[in-house]
Length: 186
Image 1 (cartoon, rainbow, N blue to C red):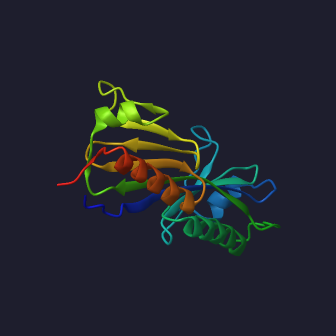
Image 2: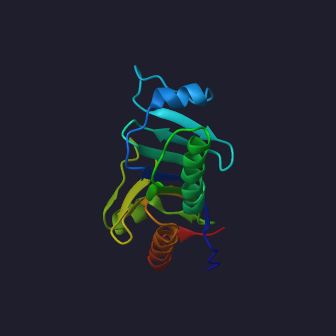
Image 3: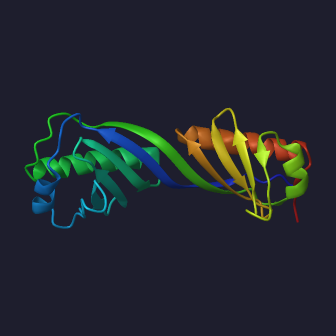
């Protein structure tokens, strides 16, 4: 059987951060008119940067959430760039941001089709209700991730906190699908 190596692409890394101080969001809007802040609708200010292309939500508590990065490294870099720009714009930020990756979302192509019905019966901690959703929802224990499995051989992995967890999850699932003869290669 022609075993192919899965193609993994990280599509979004969500990281939280804190600078451990209160921040005046109105002051930021004055100094950075390109930011978005509508406190009536949402308590956070949106600070977008082009490189890496991300959006960082900034809250008055000093907490931040960065989304859109394509790697852990870029998420960390993005938050640090935002803090740097705020400082350059005369927003006093005493400490550097403490950053934690919360979730990594990736899309995967296994390079073959999957017997979904059989896989749903075979894989532990899986849910398959085709009338509601076309894929299997598989909960992996170690690493703790959730993988959406589609008949096309495409997967979506979410919940990972490290990139290595994404690769480990995909490898474990792929090996299991191979072992149980649930992959179909053209």
